[in-house]
Image (cartoon, rainbow, N blue to C red; front, side, top):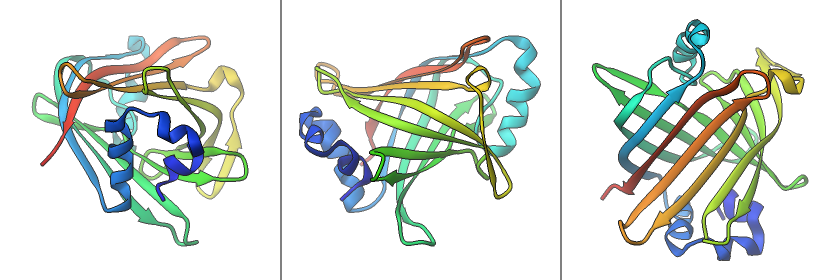
Length: 202
């Protein structure tokens, strides 16, 4: 059973049928989709060096723009300890460049959250809480975060955290999945955001 249906429990059945199908696909193998980001924004210019360094870990990037092609893939994996994992790969195709926003997720069944390790190799950990919206959409909110330094994980105070909010829905009129992601810091404001749409690849 996919980790997302496990953490949602009975609430999983309240998801839009196309979202349920999308996440249950992981029982059979990878999910692949492609589409367009209508808008990608980033934080203030002084953060550019940090964003550029993030490209080395497939986490952040300094580019922004509108109508940027992208692909998304969820690959089910098994960790060294036997736990179910899902590798997320999001690739954004800027002019002459490919940028990534990747993560490795697994289930913490005792706390009822998804464990999210961001970057490759990981530099940031976040708890993720999942909620089903009234329209059948999926709302994901990051909670406690830790910096990952080698084999150590250091809790981050709130003023250093990038709090992520993700909303995914299905647009029946356009027959597309819609995605909105915003990462914010309580002092800086928006660090990174994107919104777009995609369809499942054949």
